[in-house]
Length: 604
Image 1 (cartoon, rainbow, N blue to C red):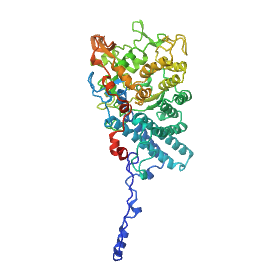
Image 2 (image 1 turned 60 degrees about the vertical axis):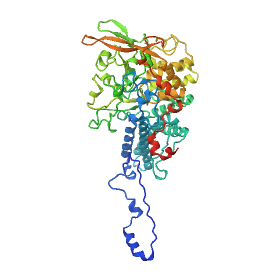
Image 3 (image 1 turned 45 degrees about the vertical axis):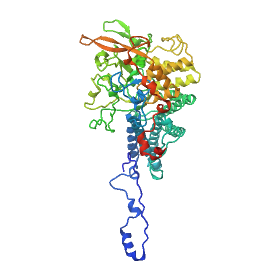
């Protein structure tokens, strides 16, 4: 039996009792000698590992945990791009605009759609592996030869409890109104392999218990060689997010405040440290999937054991990419208009001839996305972004996040020729997100000034103009927008500017959809965006060799719907506004693949 992956358990054979007459006693005696006893049938296959024979040492536990971490690192757990394009943040189809057949962008997905099935299956694979580790830890507890081994086993179990709890958190916020199947142990035995879904609150209670346990047993930090493992701070952050998903702002705020104050996290000086291979596992990182292209290069590129098995960068890159996801037009305009703090020296550029000017776009914009007319941050080794990538196909912006634009290579493919791999760690939770989520809680609790302080911490890190009246707040000398905010206006800013500008195209996928759902505005949001109209203008530029060229229609511009220059080819969200039905599309449904193989769910 493959201990880590199979769901097949031993089935015991029962011998049938046969009535034997007196005239068959000799035959009975003969059969008794050669017949199958229960003990004989229950012999362990010496060529296979069993649960009892495999789990013996702390090393065995750690082997199982490594397999669980590998499963937790799969892109299928998060489906970031599919979640992105079913929100209000992105357009993506694999085709050039305006053609689109993406069922998630169009909001016509259903229980037969492939991605929900992949996500469901992968999350339960992670849970299955975690359960094996948890059961083995519980069984072996008290049998080790040293206290160090006992302590290490306990921490291994706490990591497995976190990974199981985190998987259920994602299932709960993604599928079937939070009603999913709870497996607290490895399937089999008297309970069989099939269970019905549990009530949403039972699911929350179950995974929160896992996370609370992990919070008390896991370290706050790991030694350098162990960095990347889950921590107590990560458990507390996910707990806060779970209560935020319920709009329980008071409870969520308690967890977020502890994360901010008690674990030593800090915003990185450069926001760009959070998006590429630069400065991975930094002081801002709370939960992060570690990837590398330095190992397992001999494997097939889709092999789950590959430490760089991710196609995410190929979906996002502006060079030879697959157009899997590009920023929505409204979001591009927000990035283009992210206002500078002119008092911040980082926003001042000194040209080669000694002249001074200000940056054209904010640091947050430049490190998050590649825009055709950004002169201040190179892209794949080109000083001019326009020269590096084509912007002539109604693609006016590409995400820099999750890609290797900073390494100076022509394409991601240069890192692993002939394969689609990525060494960029996937940041699932970072401190800036917790600051903003804590700010939302504070707004809902009536503390607008404190909420603005945390939003401004995030903005100041990127040299962006601060919110509020000039000369006020934590940083009175910095530029402010000189607006007096109340709870309503600050919440609107947080929802439609700060959250998307800071956090788009990162995290564990479902956050934006969870937010739109809990705010009760997703249908309304699609309708508002469907009413917007755009056009585009050309961008002439000079190449590094001194020649000139033009990127046609490469700068998107918002216009009034009555403007004759409005181009229907730039319209967005028309289908989403028409197709979205809260009861059908707020969550992914339980996949058909589960209903077909699980008769308990299928019958219901």
